[in-house]
Length: 66
Image 1 (tube, one colour):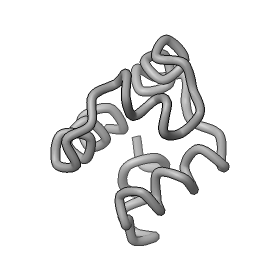
Image 2 (image 1 turned 90 degrees about the vertical axis):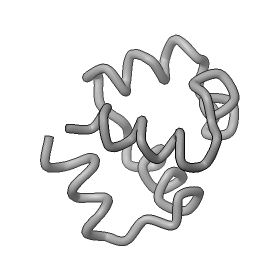
Image 3 (image 1 turned 180 degrees about the vertical axis):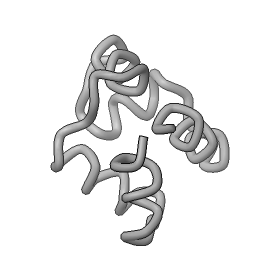
């Protein structure tokens, strides 16, 4: 599930919704909506992959296999 795995990465890297949303260029509200089921755009996923040093398998696990 996107939100639990992504929330884990946020915590691991000491981010909260407010500061991380700014890092990837979203408002806090937009980020909250996306993490709660609206889904992320490819460019947003690419940014998170780079920030969190995610493997392709982790990207699939977090963002594709909901």
